Length: 192
Image: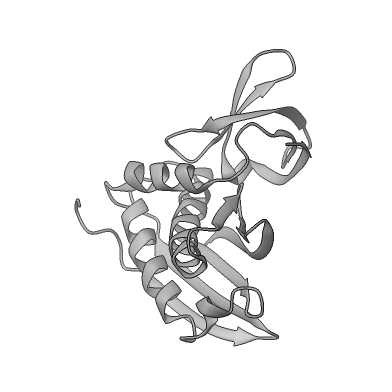
């Protein structure tokens, strides 16, 4: 499976009907930018959360790029990532009513998976995790409008997902754009 990744710290709690699992890992030498650290956090959270929700829902879970978790099309949770003080952080929030199975054990199963995948993405197993992330993403073939942190809005058809967790769009002018999770503020489906 590769070399072990960095030491990962995880905390979990339930507040206001939401399971919150927050993890952090020191930035490794393999991460070349803050943006890549954020992307890897989204990938780790996506794989960990999807794996759990998919098992609990009988195969009906997915990830709505870059950070929403769905079961049968209903958004049941979100994640956010940030870098602070030399550490990368990811926080996953799941609605305990909609994703009750994930909350049943107080979040231990999600905590274990998040610890595992965050460690893996910051080691030499990141490509494997990114491929899992891409296979869990919903929306292939949809026309979407993507709002980027830069303020740019990109419209295109979802072609697939890159091996580093990027959204691959065929734009209206026929070009192909790869959009990293950390670049994206919002994705709106225009038509399926």
